Image 1 (cartoon, rainbow, N blue to C red):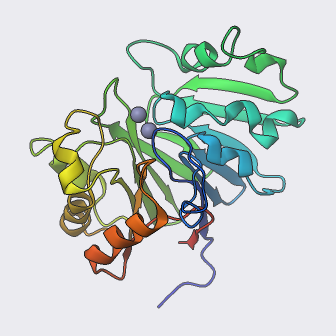
Image 2: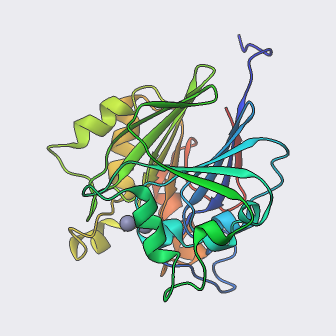
Length: 267
Ligand SMILES: [Zn+2]
Ligand SMILES: [Zn+2]
């Protein structure tokens, strides 16, 4: 029986487009904003990635703000300079594991500094702290774990656990027969799996090594891990609403779908 006293984790999809933002009337249903998922748990608001989706962050009240960056490719940090809370008098903690021995501060400042951007992160009104996360860590009552992703330049697959429920965020992940077991084990019995399915099986054949995967591999991870729900993310910028709906129809599963911007899931 469901425990009604248990505190819930609220997940809001703010951006699921991969690689670069898109726009157009045939992209409205899934949205054109790049990677960002908001997880609200207790007094914490944790943003997974800071793609252009983070620009439409909703009102999170007095919650403490954290941003977990999977990797510093532009589509995952693009929204930071326009993150609404960066303009407010508040504290923001940004976490990411070191990449090739490069601190997260250096990774972010490479983008947020002249000549690529007119100002630095320290010039904004908020107080931003950047941490080289050595996982696992606790953010409030949320346990944050990670495994390495399979992606050019590396990346992190995060797992967030709160009040007995968990989600796994496996974006910018390319399947590999020899290493898929690690992700399956990491996702064991998770309540919600986000999985990179940028390509159709056919498209994947000409995009090997790009660091992205397919819905078929996501289904495999879900089945073998016992994950209860699956949302595909990192939609290819060329895939229209109609195309994505067609890909979705081929899956024929009530617990799997392609994530849509604005979708809310409560665990
Ligand atoms: Zn990406
Ligand atoms: Zn990437």
